[in-house]
Structure formats: structure tokens, C-alpha cells
Image (cartoon, rainbow, N blue to C red; front, side, top):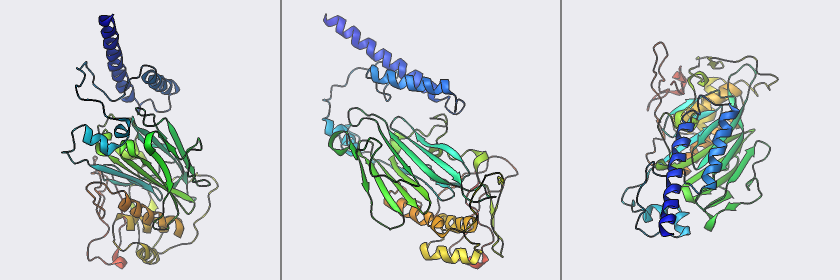
Amino acid sequence: PASGLQEDAALDVDYCTALRAYDLCTRRQARICRGDLVYHSAVFRIRELFSQHNCSSDGPTSSAKASSMPRPAVSELCDYENRVLVSGSAGHQKKYAHCGLFGDPHLRTFRDEFQTCKVEGAWPLIDNRFLSVQVTNVPVVLGSSATATSKITVIFKAYHGCTEQKVYQATTEDLPLAFQDGSRSGGESGSLTTSERGGSGVGRQVKIQARYIGTSIIIRRVGSYLTFAIRMPEDTLDYSEDSGGLQLCLHGCPRNELIKEHMVSRQGQQPHLHGTNTELGPLRPSHQVYTLERATAKCRELLQVEDLYFQSCVFDLLTTGDLQFSMAAYAALEDLKALPPSKLKQNSPRTPRVNSRGEPRMLAATAANSSLLSLLLLILLLL
């Protein structure tokens, strides 16, 4: 009988190993199969098999001897920092990454790259073994390719007894304090909680704390739109190019979705957006027309440092004429300070290099001693 139990255990281990290999192979097809119902059904079935056979999606791909170390208590497993101590990796300082989406929208990726994108419709920001985040962006102004976030859905996946699956959804009409099931916490010892956050006073804010994965999320409603910020440990992210398909926070926006260049004249005309879509339906017009001088002066009241957040503020004012909309840049900067990455480059996040000839590189719009009135070129990012 004892040998029979050992054989059963070995079969379970082999099954989970094969299932993880199948899961990895499937996820690598995510970019190609986006929108394919059969593919998404297969992904859902794999998740069911993980649950039915008590398999962890994070594990070895070959058989290994069981560890002789005692298993930590549930409270330790459900707290990322404690789990790091128990695992014996405390000597290695954990690094955190930040991703933010705000404004028209402007994207700061986990790689510390800054982009401005169109991405109209539903797009995934994050999709890994711990959580999924999807945003829905809608057009802002008639005749412009600029969009803004109107809906955010966060799915926290069931994790090792620390929490069952929880879904949080915010819209421009409703920024709830609770998950969709009406609860404000999940799992052991408050390993997953929501709370209303005070602070800068720009828009209503909800903070979601997932202690079991060391993750914090801030969602705000600023004016008529939403902003999103997240801080996650780098060891929970997979930076490989074939990881999880489309994940804007990991890989940035697709090339054809980038707003590549923002030209601003001395006369303060509206910025010209390459790839502008003129068939966006019945959209509201701009609130008012801002000149470059007026826009920079107004943004100077909110942001004293002439960084990319400042440039985003100016660009949003010139594009929409909506002062509340431009305040999203200030809110995003406040969230960056609240949820900083380990290596904070607040004033000069990296911008992706141009891979093909004939495309202009992203230039820094300001220098330490530059004058606002001499600002002729406002560029946020070019991949």
C-alpha cells in the first residue's frame, strides 16, 4: 500500500508538470490567438485542470525531491514580505516595478518606458498567474485619435488558500469600495483588501492591497475618466517577449497604436496627431482652445518640474481643452510617489528606441534652463 501511495504521488507530480508545460505553450500563442473563442476556452479549461488536480501554475518542469524544510504557516504564505523571509531569500533585496495609465492615455510601463497611445476599446494591461487587468478606452474629442479610460476591471486569481478569485470593476459612473461580490476583503488575515485613499485630493481614489503578492493598486476618477497605477514585485513579472501576449504594462502599446509625434507651434495651435481617425462618432467638442503659453502656465500651477508628466498635462490641455482631464497627469505623478518603483526615475523615464528607419526619435522637450515660451516641439514617446 505504501508503494501504491508513492506511485500515485509521482503521477500527480508528473501530471502537474505536463499541465504547466501545456499552459506555457498556450500562453505563448496569446498574441496570435487574441479574440479566438476556441483559444480562450482552452485557457479556461487549463485553469480548471489546475484547480481540479491541485496543481500550482508556478512550479518545476521536471520531477524534484520534496524539500525537507517545514511548511510555513498560512499567515506567512499570505504575506509576500514574510514569505520572502521564510524562503531564505531575505538577503536579496526585492525590487518593485510601477505601471501607470492616465490621460489620453499616457502609459508608463514596468520597464520604465513612457508612451502615448490610442488603444481604443478593451485592452489588457496585465495578465499573469496572479492577476489580470483590463481597461476600456473611449474617444475623447471629435477629430482626434486621443482616447481616455472609462472602465477598469481587475481580476485577482485564486492563490494557495490566501484568497479566492475576486473581481473589482470601476467605471466613470461608479468607483466602488467593494469587489463585485460585495466584500471588501478576501482570504486569510486581510491578504486582499480595498479602502478609500486620502491624499492629494485630485479625484476620488480607491486603493487595493494584495499583501500575498506584495502588490498595491490605486484607481482614481479624475473628471470624466479613470486613472490606474500599480506597484508589483519584479519577481512576479515575466519580462520575456513571449509572455502573456498583449500586456501593455509589460510590452507597451503595439506600434500601430502609438501616437508618435506631437507638433506644437509658437502660435499654440492644436497638436497634430499622426494617424488621426475622423470617424469616431458623436463626440463632444473641446471645452476651450488653449494656446501653448496658456496651457504651460496652467500646468505649471500643478506641476513644478518640467518632466514627462508636465508635458502630458500640456498635451492633454491642447488636445481636449478640459482642465480636469489634464489634472490626470498630476494625479498619476502623485500615485507614482505613493507606489514608487525600486529605481525611481521620476523626471526622465526611458523611452524606447526606434527600430526602423525613417521614424523620428523621441526628443526631451525640456532641459534644466529651457524657457517655456521657446518650447517648439512636444514629444511624449516614439517606439
